[in-house]
Image: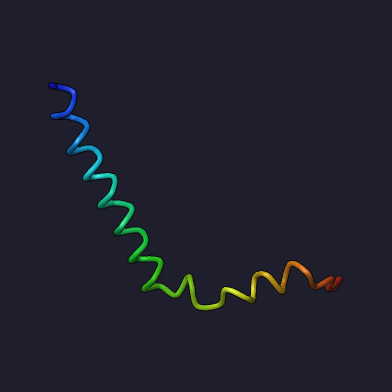
Length: 47
């Protein structure tokens, strides 16, 4: 029972950090061009 006093707040903090990281990535434009990376893998541009 005492381990729950540590595990529940730790899970809430880690979940909050994950949510904050997702919102940061969303606001900074990480998900704007989802098809671009897929097409760049297939292109064979040897410069």
